[in-house]
Image (cartoon, rainbow, N blue to C red; front, top):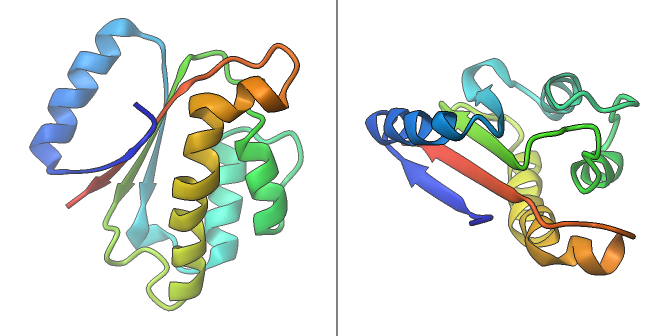
Length: 131
């Protein structure tokens, strides 16, 4: 899967119902209305994804996003709500976050983990943007 998908609230609830039946999902919901700047985002993600060390910048954030060995579930699901308000005053940070998801993080968990990590195994990593 490992993709970014745009969904309605109704579609998201249906997806959640199907995925929760498997019980093997680590879900993080990001409310864009609560994330005003890049530091808010990095703090929130560090806490929600239980990074062993707080991520102070995008380099360390990307490193942790391509580690996540402490998360036991096979599927990681990020849900962005109120994306129009997400980092409204820091468009550059918003661009970096979604670009890194597309170019680095999702492909890493799809296949690159096998080449880059001893014993690495692919994971389903899905990003839903609620429209």
